[in-house]
Image (tube, rainbow over all chains, first blue to last red; front, side):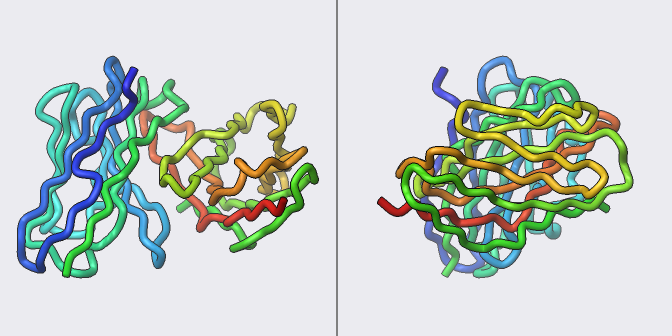
Length: 115
Length: 116
């Protein structure tokens, strides 16, 4: 299996622009997680999907952030408009099941820089 | 709310020696899971070891073992026979066993340097 796939690996954009990060989970996994990693805040969960349904979005910073999972093999995290403080590494992870899938498999991350 | 604390921002160890990374957590729950993840310079997060809170026996995975002290809410990672490839940032993480949430709560991380 190719593992969790994220694109792009690096993204540089100007403040105010829309940014879309993409994730393809491991085939057969039914839980998907978006995390953000910064020096100041460490690793924090943004949103969690189970069977394509958002279960916990309490970590989404504000309305500028939105996430979708239109099907079991694809998810997007969108930031509109982007701000310099959104600069971070964004990870997508997937697991087999919300309760039984104890191991989360992480993608390589997308490093976002907003200038 | 649950919290995870790693009080050692950086640690170093000589190759082939043993090192212990500390982690404490705070929770009012009795059933949960604890994890150690490794993040090498490639950024890829890799699961190192997992412990179920209901198990008294400490988990072991080859050179990696944990010291799980439930009453003290302590979960340290011991790396034996350290190798250069062990150099990475290590994160301790907590996950509730309640409900259907897979949410991981991470500590701040400990950067491990392995000296040849």
